Length: 265
Image (cartoon, rainbow, N blue to C red; front, side, top):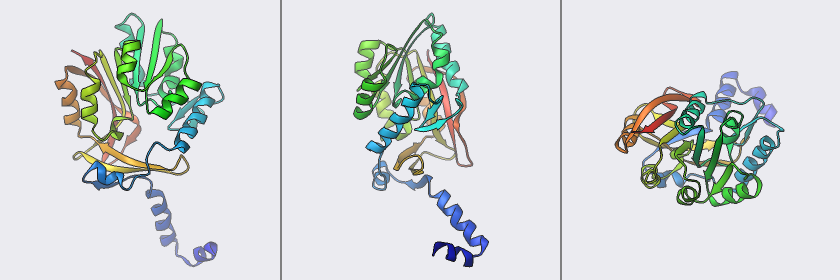
């Protein structure tokens, strides 16, 4: 029946339908509050997402594939060279020692992405702070002498004494990101590395991110930050911006994904 309908539809209509199907994924709406966006969201804490991320990263861990991002597998590592530069810079100021808190770091995506280079360091510890069900899987199936998983920043800092904070593709999914940062930055970090964070080209916005089902079924509220406010927040906390860069997620007419490297004054 569907094929018969297609026979009678002009190409311009078929193209419109095709575009509509494509465009129903991505970042949608312009919500007045986080709570309003949550009403339309499925969420990020489903077992489907966890299992897909776990299975993908196990293939990376076991050497079956070389790279994973957001549960999607790649046959070639897509490096964020500025981020890697920031990590190596932090190690040079600590005598080739690098202690990282990767807040919201999944099951170790960024660690495995850069492992080839970081393995050359004399001393490396990579601590991931995540949701409870990610931590449980991480501790059972991914933890080793370098990669550790914690339920909170306080527990991680108490044990590992990290001097680098990594925030990659995470702050935009926190309802009150600046309040969270106020709490995290009570700890003494020498460097803060930001990556894959969206900034609006007009003003701060809250949208709904709808993930294509080919990846997994999920949708969740997402902040688009205003760059000057974001930068000034860290400046007021005593950090200098060493560099900013465009992230792998790209640039569009309305927004840009960026990364930043901050150093404590």
